[in-house]
Length: 116
Image 1 (cartoon, one colour):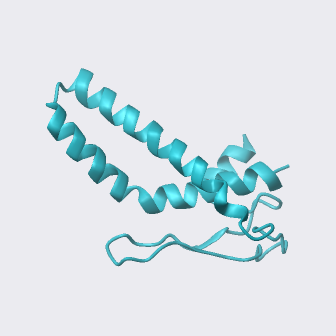
Image 2 (tube, helix red, strand yellow):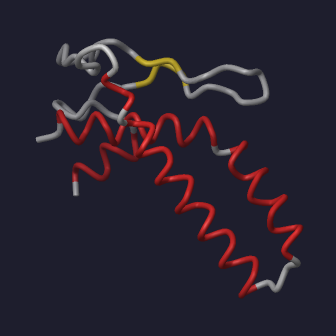
Image 3 (cartoon, helix red, strand yellow):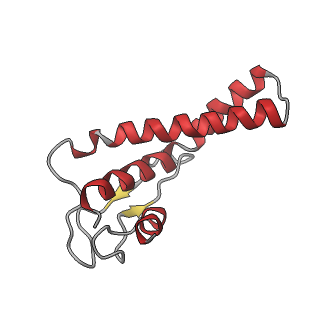
């Protein structure tokens, strides 16, 4: 349970106290989230070798697909919204959630390899 809380809060996988990200980013100001290189509390190094976060792209893809499926099913079956509006809603949701998915995919990827 502490792993899940650590992922959702973006805390260090080793000590669960230090933050992984300096900033959350802002899509409207075209700013991507910034990461710390190491934990400020326990000095755990977040990035492994060069290209470590390439695998996080697969996690981000999975998050995007899950969000898209949930939105489609709710819009189509629960609210009976026309397909063209669902399509536009999915595109808007993916753009708005891009910085969230970026952060969450990296946090999940770090926890896969560093978490205890």
